[in-house]
Length: 401
Ligand code: ADP
Image (cartoon, rainbow, N blue to C red; front, top):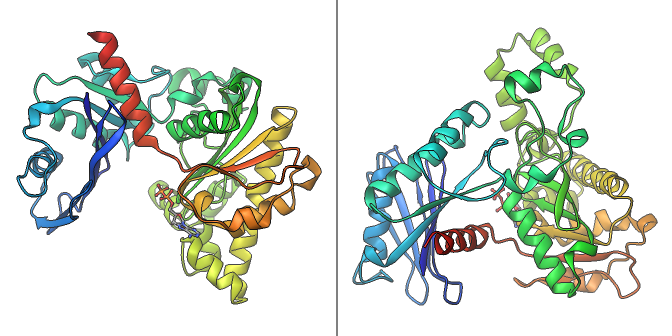
């Protein structure tokens, strides 16, 4: 079965085409600047030359049509016809409490995703645009949705509720939902496979640290706690997001600086984190360069980031009464040996012992970076959210047959 995986953002659309007989990627690509002048389609067919096309793409419907044209293009394509695509899988950020796993798209499912617009105003509307566009361009082809929140639906009430008036949960569904669920699920399973141990026996802390960053405590294969909350703002210090802070800061700063709701929201989501402290960049590569060069602002940003990350690991070890495995993944987790080294340096009380040489090796494969004596296995596992969506899509469509 050939499955097209689509990840729609407000002005972008990422895609990957899988052949599920061997889970190989036939092509992948990205449409950027949808709705702006000179939209860009970058297409990477496996075994063929990469191609970039600039054109006017005003909305997601045209973006998908262009992608399908490219996939069937005689020169750059990988398919004879669009009809070869037997299913489409979509990434949806927010599934609220309604979705505990991936599901086949129906009218009711789309209505529920729309009802959740309030909770994910930036993310769920483009997902609906992507689904509608795919339905229009590939009529009759089954569509599946995978939710970033679904994996965390196993959290206990005592974990997902906030200690605020309960009526806010009843009326407005204010609770912890978490995010990056497909990634946390994928790397925790991959860790158990790599170690050749049953996941049911393991306490794993998965560190998904990219531009956005979240940690999950995975006990017996289930998410028992995660650092992102009602929205992806809570938790770790991120590229441009603050992560945890005293909630009173919000009203205090709004009052002092006469900020509106949207201004304070933008401050915490787009102008905080590494960017705010360094004053120069939200990218960990730049921060590390500055730290190595002894720049004071980048050094402080680096130290705050590492400190907050380490504190969360400690708290999740406490939440699970122990930890067997720590997994690093996503942009920073997979690539930054220095962040991993500094974090692990201060986890010796847990019995973590890092092999500094193994930690420095660059590879796209899952790998162990702890010593044989380490009480905790420390692994680097490249994440693959698209593959999880493709697998779910394939399974659900097969079951429907
Ligand atoms: P997103 O959250 O957007 O999916 P990614 O998981 O792709 O992000 O992570 C992107 C981030 O990874 C970059 O902003 C950068 O900070 C970080 N990164 C990528 N490569 C490196 C590297 N070699 N060293 C340190 N950080 C890196």
